[in-house]
Image (cartoon, rainbow, N blue to C red):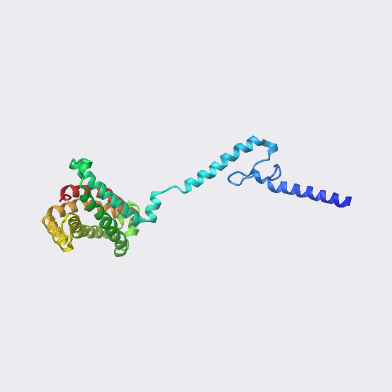
Length: 267
């Protein structure tokens, strides 16, 4: 029995020495309570003392927590790339409402209590449906299919773009197409939207006939202003990366919408 007890003691000693070597050189035996936030084994109580270990554990845990918070923080660029359609509708709706408010309160000098919220509703609906939805579909989805090299062109450097003959022709074609849509679809749609809110009639035919009539009366001035503003803007927007195409456009569109609200927004 004494021999077995001796062998058992030797076995335990050998296991302890092996475990100590497997942890790390020159360290105390592994203690699972002395792990910091990144899983690194801390030195034993004997070499540094309880106070040193206690000081390191909160710091490591804080570092781990901080990295987790950073990883989950919101990134607008990531959201715009992942949900471009939703991003565009949100921007378009908020932008058109804000532009109309600026036109009423700043350009027309109305106090907030006298704001025409019916008129503001016109721009909210028009911004969400046309500028947010329809404009995204044709300027991104349709243009990418009709103009096959449109997306590849946007990924080039400025110097490469200037040397890309087919890409420049495609850019010009996109600009002409967009200006045509703006003059012959965008403007009459705006007038019909406005009539749907301001008109006392609930007849769709009345909205269309009255709205198209106002569009025809203002055609010359509206079309000239549209081409002057959106011709140069289209060149810039259709040269930018696809996911930034409409967000960039909305920056200029804010001021254009304020102008449109100022001259055509009232009943």
